[in-house]
Amino acid sequence: MGRTPDTKKRIAALTALLLIFCLLTILVKTGALATLENTSYETLARLASPTLTNITLAITHMGSVGAIVTIILLLLTLPATRTKAGLPVAANAIVSSLLNNALKALIARPRPDLPALIAETGYGYPSGHAMSNAALYAVIVIITYRQTANKTNRALALAYAITATALIGASRVYLGVHSTGDVLAGWIMGIAVALLTDTAYLAATNRKTKITVP
Image 1 (cartoon, rainbow, N blue to C red):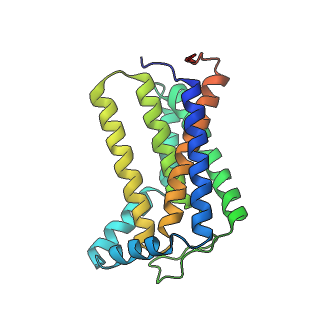
Image 2: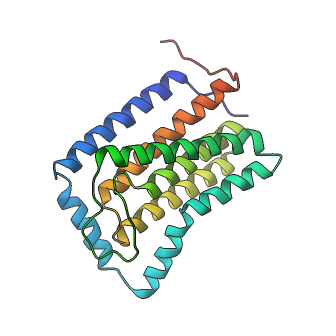
């Protein structure tokens, strides 16, 4: 069994993530990230090919709502993971979806004016795919670290989470439906949601958290 989380460290991390998100939002709204966003898209666009596009479409579908729901149902179905993983992951997905919709409506940043390879509607910031998958895999890593001290299992969970989240986010830029800023914002808020919902879950289940007093 892993160590219980340090509440003060979680609060500090959440505060830092929210401040970074606010700063990123200001940079995006003022156009300060335009060069970075254009360069990122152009770099990926130069790699475009029918084969890479098919691979990218498969990757982006891995991060779809349907894929996330399938993972949640699997965790809820298995007795070994139903309570300790299924419930917090399901709550995490719900909070992520609701918050993403609220932020998109509040910030109202249009999707990039690019030759998109798939049809998408609605606002672009923060990316729903990036946010929901960052939240999903971050909370799975948090739970894995809490439930096992096995270094190999921890490393595998972390490596897969980073790889899947990065590829899904990059796929949205390659397909022309999101700017880099949209994806970065999604990653930041996704991790924040994972920390928030996991902490709330522990509190709701009366699990004691370790508080370090300086």
